[in-house]
Length: 485
Image (cartoon, one colour):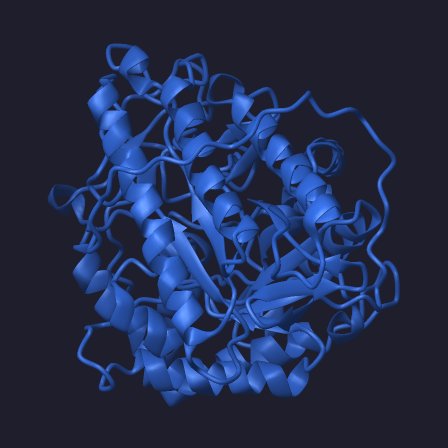
């Protein structure tokens, strides 16, 4: 997720999610390592039948699971995994990649999994093993994201920098934790965004640089080497080959790969998707492949990417504030309604496109800030003390739209809000020795912007979604497409 401009419109219809009782703590049922999720028409299925994804983004899982010497925090990890599982979460989208550089780089996950092409931090690899093993114990599957358009994990730009003899990366505006204003205690916040006045480049400059990975054979070769290393890895905790473990539902090419234009089929994104998805399929034929596309650029791009043979299902990300639809400082009902209307139309449009492509679609990112108009005159605009009236209403609407589509036999198969911050709060944050706080928001963004906390009503909305869908499947399921009226 990043700042960008929307290319989609809005509509007036609103859909709400049904309400139920609060979730109770329960015994978790582990993932059967041989029960691979598969695609059946517009549906996902497992050994029990229809498979609906109640997901969350938890990108830092391998870092939290790593040794304390690497900034890990196992106690926090298992606490938050238990919290998510108790709310019915059965899927996490996590990073299975992060890239470093010869000199320390800002705005990114630190330490990195890859310190140079082919050179791994073994303690982070073990962290990834632990992460997957703990997920499996709790019945949670994973999307393994193998690269990133954006700077917060190194990603495309770092591969290109490596391939260009460590060329400097033209970083776009990013959160600098050491910039003023600062709290009295060092390493506890706040910071500010970099600007073109203090060295930041434009997002267009950064994207053009990063997207050289589509045509740079050296960079792509190193990227494929990483894919092979991870897919063929044997988990040091449970002994399972990654490619033979159904805990891994999906291998994802990258987080939000961008097209350079919508002039089809000349954009190098499309043959890159075809090459990389085919390569992943050759290494992991039992698991699914997704691209990680936002789908913000409209029908032509959505279809060109998701029609690729080895892509199993489509993905969507919906960002109403980043795309200029919503203002987090505006408490008006009209502001909220504009966001809800946009989201419902976005779900409707992308559902239609996915149906025409003939594949399922997964809403794997969306979010909304807290009621930050309450923080506007305070020391930090993203304090957790702000309410969540708009966020809660928005979550009810967008999750409700997906659930409604699913119940009608549409291609939507689940949701995954961005992103779980769990027990973390900006008011109590302390940077570790690597400068990380591991908020739900990644290191290039203001901590606390889109976090879902363990006590947030949004987590109850996520839990109600899971129970609502489970009841519907139990009472209406025949072959996954028919609905009993």
